[in-house]
Image (tube, helix red, strand yellow):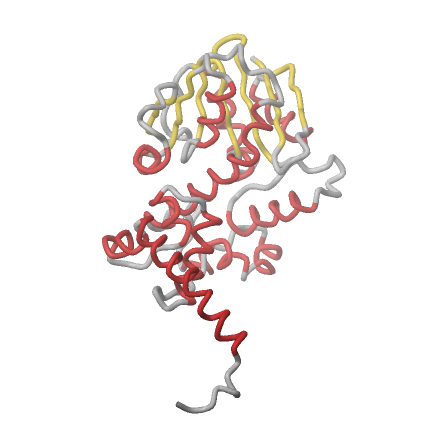
Length: 315
């Protein structure tokens, strides 16, 4: 046997101790079904899509997948998301005052979800991201006002249903209907909303082009900021017409200061609306003006201190 004087024993011991951690990473990925899911898909999946597909947290799944890549159990393919592609043309958006879909994707689009819904994977990722937002901020905006008198609620553009789930949890005597595009409703039913959640129902449709059923309260969460004032007035007028007397509409948006000096996060969101949509972030007074134009009165505003705030208008 040769001499062992040149061996780095502390390093060797550390490597041996890491063997347990390495095996746990591999077995955990197997237990959760990471490799099975990727094999069944037959194509690369994003970390968010894998997390959603396996019912895991996005934060935890990203770290697990990073470790699998480092161990060479998986390969990673970096892709550019729609939001980043559009932001490459921010200067053009500022000069022209319009979104940058044509430059980013080679097609003209007025649909603010054009990039998010280019594929099922993109749509799933977008919906999972929105659900993550409402898991953090949903209860704050829903508790900003006492919504318990409203028993019949429609969540227009409710997506993956996280806000609807928070709503029925906070107001157990209410029912919430998620109104969204057919393909969004299908994914929400399959991936996000448990069939045991009897207080949540679905309505397929395009709320700009299809009728809006009668209800006591309508929730528009991060909807109006996608559109210009004319489109907002058009939608709010439809909501007002459908709303039962004494009912209302709850706007959930990130509010700018009245002098538009901040908050900085909201200013950045507004830049994002510029490059991706027809809309913008607004002040409380600007949202109140839109509500008043549609017929709503007794308008109340509550800042939550979180990313999103609440504006309630009554009929």
